[in-house]
Figure 1 (cartoon, rainbow, N blue to C red):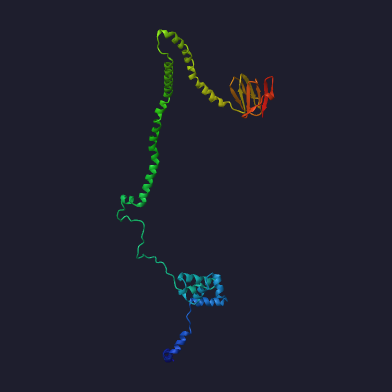
Figure 2: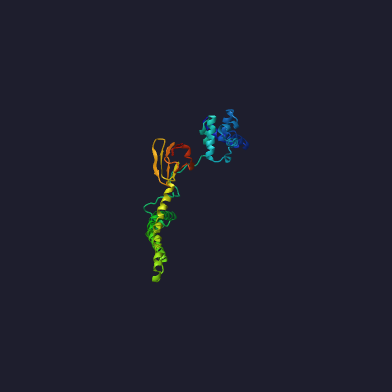
Amino acid sequence: MTDADGQLPGSAAMAQQDSPPHVLQGQADAGPAVSAGSLIRQAREAAGLHIAALAVALKVPVKKLEALEADRLDLLPDAVFVRALAASVCRTLKIDAGQVLALLPQTGKPSLGQQSAPINTPFRSPGDGPGPSLLAQISRPAVLAGLLLLLGALVLIFLPAVQQPGTATQPATPSPAVADTPAAPSGALSGVAMARTELLEVDKPPVTDSADQPATTAGMAPAAPVLAPQPSAVAPPPTAVSVAVSPAAAGIIVFKAKGESWVEVTDARGTVVLRRTLAAGEEAGASGVLPLAAVVGRVDATQVEVRGKAFDLGAVSKDNVARFEVK
């Protein structure tokens, strides 16, 4: 009994070795290999879901799902995308994703050990050599550009201050012209004096004999009237003043006196804007709040203009006194 039991395994092994090759191949094919794509396809078919409907639910192309189910991972971008897509399909089909992900290629895990290539750190350790010199730092293009900008700003700030002393000396040049201005009247007076001297020399009678002396004295008599008109040569300045003052006689009502007269003008508020006695040739104007009430003392010796137009006093006069109103 014991010998038989001890010979059974050996006989079984002998029988297996004596089996033909096609029988062993059939036994190997009996257990098919399980892949991630086949598990996903079986779960989808068990759920009765079409691959196109699953693609719409996941918002991915149908070709990518077909490549995943066919285990054609070379048609997909990378391992990370494959694992993410498989996890999404498992979550939609409500199956365990761990078994599927275990059959997929793993992604590279980062190594925490010291790398062969050191990191290019931006800082310098104390054991390194000395840093760049100041001249090397200044010679950099960025530093030179900043210095040029600073220099330009300083020039713009201090250049107006440098130009101000030159401009302050310019007004001193016209001062001689101002000093020479009062000299003009003296020159004019000297010219007038020379002209008077020439007139006197022209009017002087020639020296004659004693026989002609009565005639000479008779000729000298008219010389006195020649000296009398001399003040008239100085008189024109008042005339110029009167001409300069005449434009002041402007207003709504203008009075021009041909002889001695008097006028009075009162505005709408009762204020007397003009009350004056006019001499011959004198003018006066008045303005104020309309209507204006005017009184003219002598109609025959006064002319009136209202807004630049002549006004007939005869229609409003009585006993040589005119009263009218300007609105």
